[in-house]
Image 1: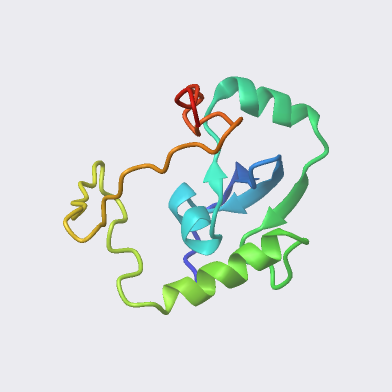
Image 2: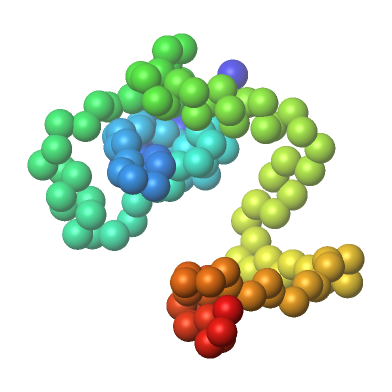
Length: 129
């Protein structure tokens, strides 16, 4: 059972690259929003919130049994992630440092561009090729 802490309205964005979907989500905290839905951000920028205020965004209660299209799949995805080992291990950390081991990667010389074509980096191919 969830606590009886009062809820407030958060502007939530799912940015899918070529656009985004927005909702007002009523929740007890920003963290609750992020733990409930995968791939969303709680928007803080005053200008973006001001623009969103003018839109007819759907309002959703985080405890509702049914979510609107789009948000329903993000909740299902987060539920499946929660069952995985290590879920939430990096939560609440201000900085996370990752080590990348490049020793197993093969390094190959780039192949020359074919005749009449430019190399991938935009340079001209050598004369005579």
